[in-house]
Length: 449
Image 1 (cartoon, helix red, strand yellow):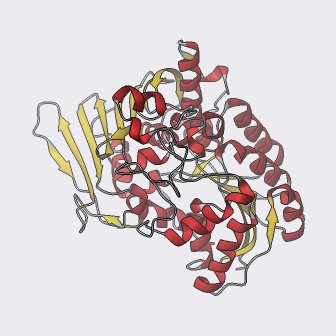
Image 2 (tube, one colour):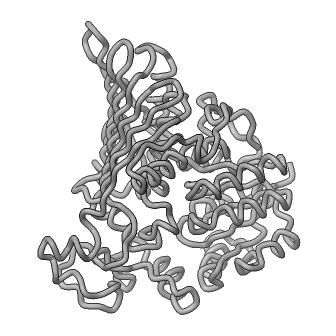
């Protein structure tokens, strides 16, 4: 079979999740035809890496304003979008109207008007959008889906999901462009889209109404000063500055970084070209997103979700509990390291002790028991390689649990966060249908190429 042609727009760190498998394991099925970005410095770092690490000829580079030219000249079958969240819609819509399918990093977009624009473009063009919810593909999340779908506990009536980001991972959202709500939609869109999507998928229902509260309670200059942490304030970034014992310092000139060559190659060396600072101080003024949030969601079938997110926890992981007709189901994950850096998960703890997952069942009038979670290699609890296979293989395996997600599922997940932002702004409940009307297809994926 003839390989599909892939163009990549956005060449920050996240593109490697898609570019690397296309250039290696699936290189006979996926041809890299172009890279597009605001920064040639960033793109050239990836082009050089493709040549040295994967022995591929460097693909042509196009600046972001040349995106339409790139589509015309390179004729990709699929465009992979990993740009800043607030710009996803621009590239998705243009690619669809050029006759391409799209693979986009989550969230699909950040607000209701941009969501409507994408849905309209899909309807007008008949092309496909895949949203890469790798959480769905993790071994633990898949076992939860299998168990709930089996009907042993009856219908789910109430879901509690508490997600904790630690002071390594959570803090990172306050160093980068994600700290500006206009760019990311805030954590309830950028990060929580994963979690809302999991619940939508697990219970097979469409969110309908949202109420939310949130605060910037820990990060930011005002909070640091109130706690008496003045020594960590007064500067905007870390690189090149004396930061004493600040445990939140993230210096791009630190040789102890996980991948200092990458950090310097695509961020530090590109600063003059882009103006983007990767290593901003988490205790600076001007942060516009929340770091602690609480959301209540009512679904169309009257299932309730009680959700919370904390971005300054001492440890990382999440707990999801399901109150059902015949008892209670509890699923927990503890992440000893950054979730994306995990190398795999076994039934409870991996060989490094950095990942723990457990699924317990508490039936009415019976003894509780545990459902074993199988070993699964790869990042995001084993989800990344399975998702990559679905994207780049010309003959991907069957997916009986409907883990592949399209534009309707992408919309259903982000709109919970968008409605939550609106509820926090107006101090009132928000009906999702007033923002964007979700169709029944938001439940299940019917077709995806």
